[in-house]
Image 1 (tube, helix red, strand yellow):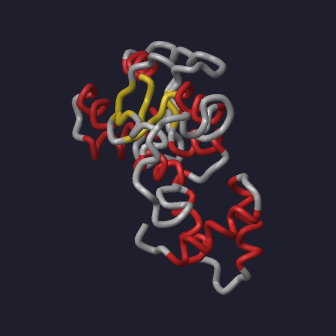
Image 2 (tube, one colour):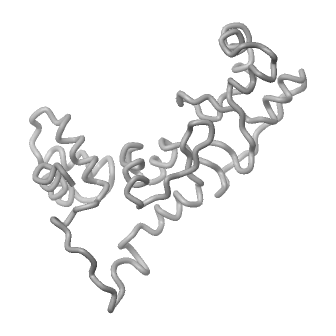
Image 3 (tube, helix red, strand yellow):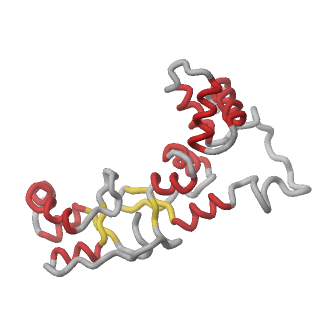
Length: 200
């Protein structure tokens, strides 16, 4: 997570500021730096650091603390956003690709989503609650090939079928319902659609 309004930097820029080649910085200086200034995106292949903390470290000053708590303007990784929505990072990226969620913001190669957008998507899912579904008098739009056409959960269902190793559909559906929400019956339908329509 990148806390609200905090500029960030990466290791290539830090090495440039230190006046050494990146491989030299990573071999010689990075271990001590990382002990004092943790990456904002732990576990990511893109190591990003808070700029103010980095500048303080390079100047030999005390490293300031990051803002505490959560804020709507925090930027979340796919893993963090997916955890809030109760889905997998793969499904979250499918949501973004299919327009159920914005494409996110790319910073130094990392794709991030504002917390407020993720919370809004969680609390106001399309087709649920006030304003859900098609309004009276609205054209119906193109007819779907099947009921779940365009549903990003189909990607999750396809992945589950690929890795199921012959498990019964009912057991797969129950596991998906437990992991991602919804009912086992809905996931059985999604699994059936995923198996029958591999091109949608």
